[in-house]
Length: 206
Ligand code: TMP
Image (spheres, protein in one colour):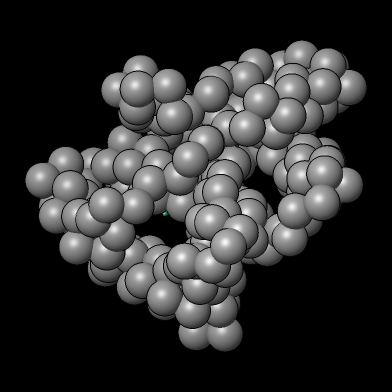
């Protein structure tokens, strides 16, 4: 470890349509203005191979367990090539989604066995968890309304119905309740500027 010490690892989570993207940009700008080197990245993706896996994950039909394995395969690559080196040199890493998304979508949404999830998580990043996770919590009906307003063609996940996103939301909240304060739940139904202030507050606290 260098003189700067280890960087911080921050992740953002929420169901599709909860409005993560613009808030992540604001958070990254805040951290940079505080003088940190910030690596902004996303999952699935974040590396050339990870982005190719992302294409498959978002558009190719596949079995549930294949989906979970590919999410973690992309994550292993992301950790080895981007996240771990950045943290080691003292940079801050801000990722749009990480393993909490696998818990919410594959375990909660699709019904992957928790034991399978636990095994993959400890294999792929045993000791490492984000220092802070900001979870945007939103009612699935409102999230669907927001997604419809973007006019973009929905991917394989976005085409899922409200009951799927209801299970994803519940799983996120369950995970947050058991995360010893690592996961901060923000109400994404608040006005954009109020939500932004809450996000920036979280960055300042860190
Ligand atoms: P994004 O649209 O926020 O970039 O995320 C891509 C989709 O992938 C989103 O619908 C959530 C899903 N996803 C999972 O199902 N499991 C995961 O582990 C991750 C990282 C994403």
